[in-house]
Amino acid sequence: MEQKEINSQSMLRVGTILRGIYRIDSYLSSGGFGNTYVATNIEFDERVAIKEFFMKGITQRDDNQTTVSVSNSENTDCFQQQKNKFKKEAHRLRKLNNEHIVKVYDLFEENGTAYYVMDYVDGEDLAERLKRTNSPLSEQEVYQILPQILDGLKAIHDEGLCHLDIKPSNIMVDKGGNVKLIDFGASKQLENNGLTTTNGPTAFSQTPGYAPREQIEQNIDKIGPWTDIYALGATLYNLLTKKHPPLPSDIDDDMSEDKHNALPFPKGVGEIKFIVLKMMKTNRLQRPQNVDAIEIKQAPAFDSHKVKNGNWVEAPWSTNEKDEQTIIGKETETDEIVDKEEKAYINVLRSHPDMVKSAKKGDTTAQYELALWFEKHAKDYSYRKEAYKWYLSAATNGHSAALFKLGNCYEKEFGVKKDISTALYYYQKAAAQGNSLAMDSVNRLKHDSEKDASGCPDATATGHEALKHDPEKGVSGWGGCLRFFISFFTTFYLLDNVIAQDWLNPGVTVLGFLIDRGHVIGAVALLFGFLGVHWADRFFGSNGLG
Image (cartoon, rainbow, N blue to C red; front, top):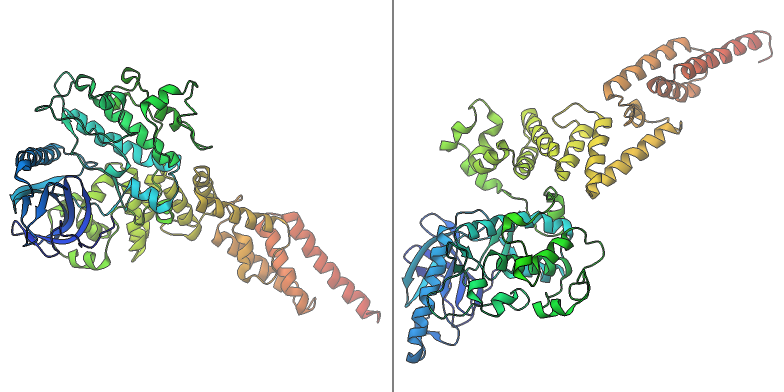
């Protein structure tokens, strides 16, 4: 997330210490009811985010640039009511224990107002992403984040809450593509029967385009999980089209069956369009009534190549070499997760125990990232072998980037015996999932194969490298070399003093090529051709005709 300098008198100064342990480092954002800062927990040297209750137009910062006060005494009751709501928001977040919901760690009052401390998400919200790239997300990219959003929403609803403000700016994505739902200021508690309760006449806040009819009309008894589902549909529409979602009345005015006038989609958007249309039904009873009722196809495997090249910069669990060197050698409880004799795991286990645990439990993304770690830190064969093993595990589950990397392993003999035909197989599987790097590799290997099959090899190729790796025949490097040298020495002895040296090198190369390809008859014919030239030279030369 982009950090901004603090330059307004309504914000805390950089360096301000809160609760004796939190140091304000920079400013992140502001809303109508608060300021959010990046801070450091100086006790543990941990980066956190801190939200401060501050009502624009009602509160002000005193001369000390720290204390908050109400500018007009008539607004004191309003300030207290809203501050209590702010604290309730923190309490609601605190009891939600889900990896896709921002976690609250502390709540306190100081400087005449209230603060809560939460996860710092090193990334950007989806609204910022659309603005930065000036382009919508692809359907595949949406499928990569949608299951995470749904998982977070389900956790919210299971706790008897409605978020009531789902929109792109309230969905954070870190640099590894991991989703966090934020800003529960509009959330409400649900009764056991699914209806919403309030503590007084407070109206529901709403964002035009993302709020369904029941929320716009403030129908308390009609608010439920389906309300958040409508907002999620509107969010997906915005992400896929970069267009602001229409109002429910505009959707109703569109009499077409597929609502293509009110909800136009770009060409190429497939199945997800129908999911969005179902989520955005203006009649709440026609929408999925809960997260479990939403049917989506299996999300494509997370491809860190695409992330690095387009949307988010780093892969999950990306590390700092200096930090890892500091951790190495420090004893931790995680040592017993794997056998102490597995030396290759010592460093990664101590620096990323959660990644190892997730990989061992079958998490495909964790398996792929663990393989990347071993590849990046490959000090010896054991590391390369582990990288290959985890790429294979992720590839078995259809991870496109892992399929590509597995092809690399077989092509470059990284942790496994070289086998070009197997490399081509995995490249083709990755290419079928749209992996552009794999497509390039398939074309390259096929081009090399066609060049070999043309019968026009490079006569100067050392050890005929261009010939011995046939993706279709599966000829191994050692086998090709062995056959080549057998043909070389056989031909050398047979043709010693037979033909001129400038004939020998290309002749031997072609002979080796034929033997390597299994063209035994052609090789024998060529050999007898050489001998024929030799006998003719001897015969005519001895009779003075040469």
